[in-house]
Image (cartoon, rainbow, N blue to C red; front, side):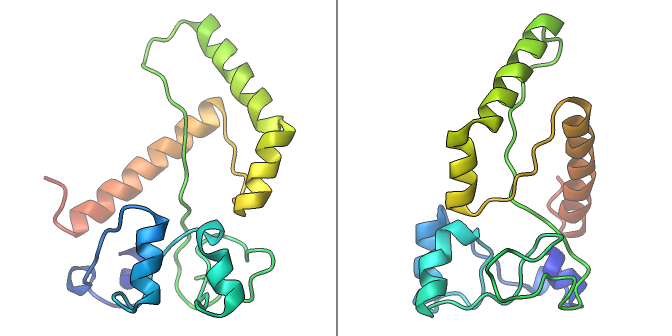
Amino acid sequence: MLIAKAAGVAPLTVRYAQHDGGGVLLGAVVSERVAVAVSSLGEVAGQIASGQLRVLATTGRDRAEGVDAPTLREAGLDVVFANWRGLVAPPGLDPAHLTAHGTVVARLRDSETWQQAIAGHRWTDSYLAGEGFGAFLREQDVRVTQVLGELGLDT
């Protein structure tokens, strides 16, 4: 809906179809049941390489390595977003446990196995820890709340 809005299309006029998983979405695009989709490069790399799919634009701040396509901003749409994941814990977690969890996550993130997974899935490493991640979550909460409100989905 952010893309529609940036392109001057009323988001409420867009027909949106949710698909559970990349495989189902890929089938919908290849069979032309949907006109356009947003997915991760790792899930569609084979279809891009074979010519079954064409990348119109990427959603990140920078171009995706090895992909001959502009970012949305380069294409004239002032939109940047990423599909992100995070690890969270309940409030009030003992500081010693918080530190221990942070240390384990940092070690995992720096491991060769994780670095190979990032490369193999063509993910962007956007690791944030502590207050940096907290600030990001607060920013995302404001952004999502605003978009849902504009779509009338905030109830």
